Amino acid sequence: MSLILDALRKSDRERQRNAAERLREGPQPAGVAAPPAWMMPLLLAALLTSLSALAWAILSQDQPLTGNQAGQPGEKVENNAPRGAVRPLGAELARARPASAPPSTDTAGGATV
Image (cartoon, rainbow, N blue to C red; front, side):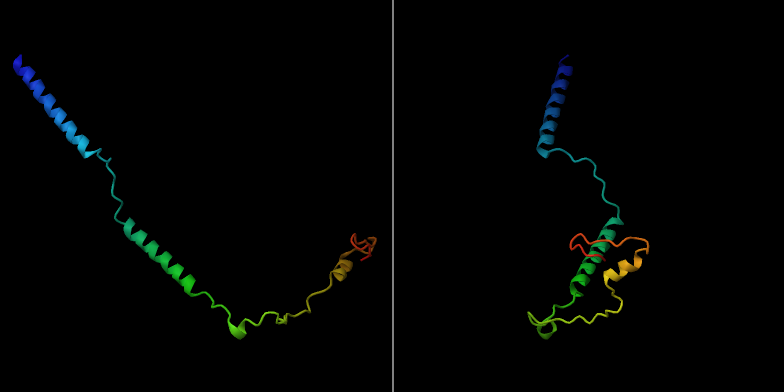
């Protein structure tokens, strides 16, 4: 019986020693799998593409106008757009209204169109 009791005491001491060592080491992380081998080159290529697109966008911006290009404050700017295609709204409305419709009045001014 003393052999069994000695064996139990010995195993209890080993268990306590192993438990103390495990507490000092801390918890063991769960098995985290390494990323696939193809992922790192793909991420590197995406990073380089993004950086090159950003550099191109920054470097290809138009330079700000300076001196005579920008004009002086208060200087009149002429717009030389063609005016041939623009017709007054009243003419368009008169042409679109059927002949049998009565003339309408403008609510703001009370004038007929």
